[in-house]
Image (cartoon, rainbow, N blue to C red):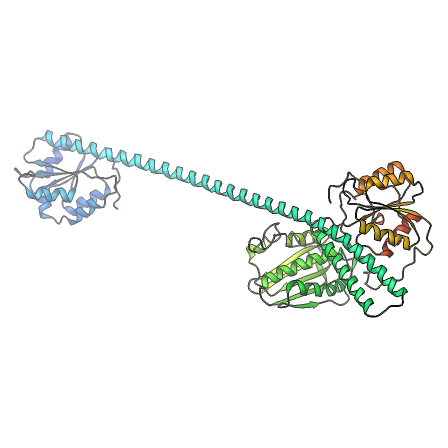
Length: 571
């Protein structure tokens, strides 16, 4: 498409190679103060048109003698706004009605006017000025069209920006709504989980308590062999169930962190069966345990949950088959390279490495964001790695992830070192705190009849006098009628009057009486002012119960008055 600039000043091109027509036309236009330029041939005319002109005057014979294809090509390639005007000077009687060639010129030039010779100067000047005005209107249309296009482009850009902003807001709203739904679902699951764990702990308390009585009964009757072995299987299963409820309570965030010196090698070895049953038999588990490993200061249950989360993620990344490596090591770290890593120092490392699909850098940058997951909808909460990071940071350590697309991923948990030696599973001889029992009257308050019965039976076996109450109101009534009660055991989560409310009322009436809480979970908010010596966690065994009761009666558990916050609404 040719560039047709608007020349300054106006310019008219003249192509009349024969005779004096070009000079005459130029003279007439000059007298009318119209600038013109004579072209000697078609090539010069085309060059003038490309430089810019408003009108072109041609003679009929000039067009007849020349190849019109070039000028026809220039006319057809004009931009949409341009319709260049031509004036053709014809011979006498050369109008359209008597000159068939004129029709051909109209088709070739498009916007053409015919003027017969000889012509009056005024006629030529009038015709040129008319075409100049028409050309100026074309220039104005071009300007207006360019302004309109610019405004349309600007408005389109504004609308596109507004549309992008609206889409971003819609996506953000959808993400927030999805996150809210996920949080609500997890909160509901957490509440359900804590309730199930509480009830399950009640059942396990009854199961373990009665297993203990059966074992003692069989021993007293001199019965040994297969029955003892089967009772041992039952006890092992019940204790595994107790560990399971600990994990459920950790998920629902109703388990208090209890960091202690821990042998990581022993912890990893103890988890092997659990890991294998969780990830399936198609994945081989390899453990690489460092010799002379320092003890770690960590909550064992939370560590087990974190490693289990990592193993499940590794299983999903490997899909079918593969190898999972769990390793331990003493490490010394330099300055952190990312926010999730711990400060420089000495740590214990537990790493979980898989041979799965690995992660891209983009995914790697988002893995610790809550609710971020690459799994299908409904297949993952997106909280696994964020919980692992939260646990590691809360424990005083951190996490590092190394991943290689197509080769696998390694997640390293860094934990602080303990200043004391780790405890082992081998029981050390402990002094028998119940060897010399103090005679005491104990009130047991629990809404679950079976739990209350087994708790009372354990205490009676130890020689205590036990009274029972199934609710807070019944317990207060017994205290009014029995002033000789020396200790109160209260189930923390009871319907109606909660254990916390009952404890406050007892303290108001008898501030010196010791109180112990028996609970299937530890609610941080409600039990914030209660020490571990005042709490007996379900499920418990007879020796644990007797030890804490003996300590409370001897006055060795601190102040009898337990400072409690407002009653908990948790089940």
